[in-house]
Length: 267
Figure 1 (cartoon, rainbow, N blue to C red):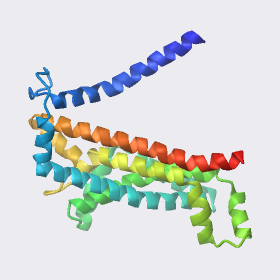
Figure 2: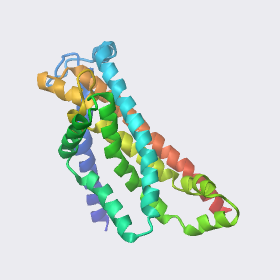
Figure 3: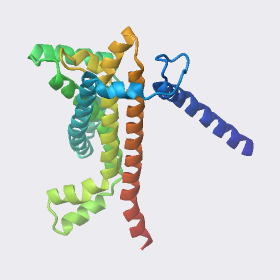
């Protein structure tokens, strides 16, 4: 058993090394004064200074963050409503159909989704830019939120709802004071997953961006074709730190929401 435990730990370390080594390599060379990622010549913060002086790139970062926050917020609201609709669908066939349609969007290739949105926006006359990107991000984020929220709804006991109704609570009170507080961890998980998918997306965004508006992933792709400057390394390092802070924040939020329940059980 000890041998298997050691091997499993070594395997886990190897997997994490493969995943994180390229990221730390990129961060390490963001401090290189040589200007390339082939030989480290000396420590410098010039690439970070250059990054903060590049107003166009900072505007693109701001666009990306705004799109991610807006799409994650709207998709979380729609995803929670969708999960409730799937859970309380009266006919089993309707429930299975809704769940299947939700899952199809997740497994569909991003290129097909992006091309479909491009055709749709062109046909209905929506100008490619901020609105088209926002709508596309909301559309592919909603199914993710549904999958995060639905398991929490399914594990909730119906007796809690019946007890609230027997005590005189309205359906709105049941929703806001019983259901939503119970599924809060799933809602936060769906929000952060939607936020991550939006920040990370390239394929769908590539199809629906227009002249004068772009996101960070599309901009980095276009820069990479001409040769990436190390200020992109600096930007990637800052985004990695920001992502880690989000993960740590989500961890403490979930711990804080679980703590009162644990205290209540001990009492």
